Length: 306
Picture: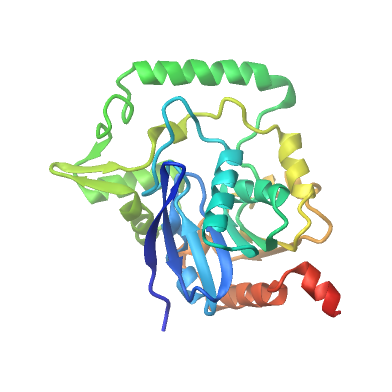
């Protein structure tokens, strides 16, 4: 029997983070980190299949059903990483595994630098920070990002003038926007799972819950060198699983391959960027369960026993 999800709200210094959990609380602890503009529903099909695991999937701040940041704040990977450390602390997870997708792998690469409590990491179609800036373009990028932010806030562009301005007459129109803007290969069923957790029903239609500022560029993103440094310094066991038709099917993988630590293991799987959500097969699930079981208990206890 597959695990039934449970939803919780966790208050972290006045910001409520929505969390969806699967499995027994005494199971193998897995922190599941979704990608950009996704939410905890990214693991709706995979998490229930991870028998014996306690899967904790937060909606990152600004996403899904979690609160938004204040208007004088923004959304940076290191802030998401700090939030996730606070989540694991609040849940009493001294040691845990990380299962991250897309942008979540960027958050995970920062987590690896912040804590020694990560037993293993699995990246799903991601290779760390997805949005970077050239070293010599940082000042110009900062100026452009702030100009765009001020322009958008002063305008009547969709989603910024009123809290409910980004409206849809039907669920179908919301789903279509979700698919065309983020992943044109995403099936209607997978898009529906993500959208339903990110939609607010109004008297005359629907609107997105997520903060529209998420589509704005970060004023101070990581540089490509910094993103690669974070990857290369991951010390825990690291496994990268890619969709054969995903975001790294072309040259993107080769561009960061050299930054991977020598112990990293790479595998390719059927499907696109959301292959873990579309139709996770038994082979993928069994591989994940083997990896989690192999590294459960942490590196130090294993070394002592060996």
